[in-house]
Amino acid sequence: KEAKLWGGRFEDSVTDAVERFSESVSFDKALYKQDIMGSRAHARMLAHQVSRHVSAIVGILEHELLDEITLAGGLMTVSDRDSILHGLDEIERRIEAGEFVWRMDREDVHMNIEAALTDIIGEPAKKLHTARSRNDQVVTDLRLWCREAIDKIVASIKQLQVALIKLGLNNEGLIVPGYTHLQRAQPVLLQHLLLSYVEQLERDVGRLVDCKDRMNFCPLGACALAGTGLPIDRFLTSDALGFTAPMRNSIDAVSDRDFVLEFLSANSIAAVHLSRLGEEWVLWASEEFGFLTPSDSVSTGSSIMPQKKNPDPMELVRGKSARVVGDLMTLLVLCKGLPQAYNRDLQEDKEPLFDSVKTVLGMLEVTTEFAQNITFNHARIQKVLPAGHLDATTLADYLVNKGMPFRTSHEIVGRCVALCVARNCQLSELPLDQLQGINSIFKEDVYDFLGVENSVNKFSSYGSTGSECVAEQLSFWISKLQIG
Ligand code: ARG
Image 1 (cartoon, rainbow, N blue to C red):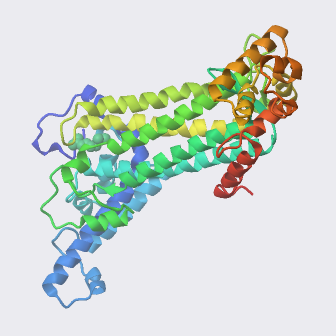
Image 2 (cartoon, rainbow, N blue to C red; image 1 turned 180 degrees about the vertical axis):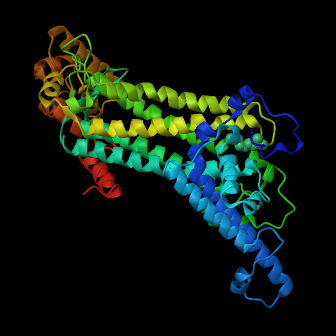
């Protein structure tokens, strides 16, 4: 058995069960890019510190000259740095070519890479872990990884927003029933409904971007928990890795995973949004609603019922939101009992994080494809639109416009609706004398307020569903998302 990198004080090796139980390389190898990136920055900083040190002593030497000098002591010589950088390049190449051998007995991604570096370049590799611990290393890797993951999710959300807007543009003027309590409520433009999801997704983007800004601080140099007495420059590594600044407190730097919690919270909210959209489309694809038909390319069949065509992708979007919420719960519970600072429990942060990101990306991709592949059934929607007295609120507003208090008009329109129910007709089909029989305030102009087309356009306050308000919203999004 190979000696562990931490093996100095140990006489016996760990049991196979412990080794298998505690390894993380099988999943944290996903961090290899970030780990190598962090090591490069760290090695450059260490070598830079030497030159700075010496230049302080020598005083007169130029920086460029110093880089030529191979020093025997100090944090790291430039030649050690160069062979480390070289070795890291080679490791990255091997990983990407699938030639790298990941070893479980080397525990995690960090020690796999460090040990492989020693295999490749020998002695200089042993300087890389100067003023560094896996505790600050892993959390640096994780912040770098999350940063990139957030960018991917944000880009993917934007694609879905564009698809929803295009879907709206292809169905201009289509009025659909708006629901509350899943009961017919008021008529809305389909575009208005689709834009409501676009707004929700935009707040998801906002949460992710906020989270990224807050997480973009560098833990590297916090070492195990207390920092170090060695003359490192944390600002240098922070800058090199594109962080805003080094984290102020070394204990905080290695202890917390609040940035993952925040990220998974934002993912969970986004997943819940997608799940609700999924639920709506699944309902709308049913025989009972019949409002939309997904194309074959986004539907699946039944193994027993030959006639079936199911909207499975959106059911799975609804279903997979459970995983995303579950991942957040896992991490919340993982963190709740931990004393400062690093605890090995934190190794368990990665799988829920990776799962959440992978799942949300999949959900976004499939929802976008679904949006690109559904047809709204205009004829069917038009046919069922008159049911449910969607224009009743507009009728109440008509009476308010005539000076009547809203509570009174609500009561009167309620009686009109009761009459319709009794006569099995719509409000627009009630003759004027019948309306006037309920209240004399009704005049011939009432018919301009009845029927869904009239009704929908009476909604004209800022943010309403009337066609002018929706056109304003649309032009906002078209320019914001640069839809050509
Ligand atoms: N694999 C570990 C993790 O993911 C790395 C840090 C381990 N540190 C330690 N002292 N055992 O958290």
